[in-house]
Length: 156
Image (cartoon, rainbow, N blue to C red; front, side):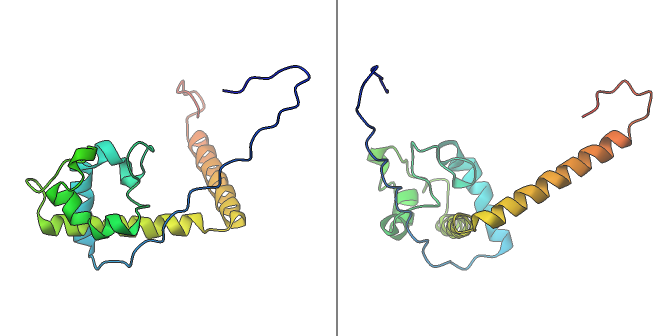
């Protein structure tokens, strides 16, 4: 909450430095079928708390940006319930050790993808955005062009 006073001379404190995001751990071997199964298991059991594709809302850990200690204890947390007192229930009764290992490997892949996006130069993101906007405009134009002239359908 900011309150202003006429003639006041106070200044805002400097912003907090951004939180350091840990380096993702080494990738674990995982094939496409295992990735698909890991995604499904995640969506069935983890998404409601940890978010779609492990992007957290800030109330629970973002699983793409875990500190090394959480990766080292991933199976103990997910299978055994090491963090149950903090609200993270165990899933050993519904997920096998192999499913948990595959889910961990998939989350590490997501961490590497997140790192790549964060390190993409701004100029490249600007070019990609411009290209996508032009492509969307072209698709919209094409769809409008294909509508019959007497169509009562609302044009996009």
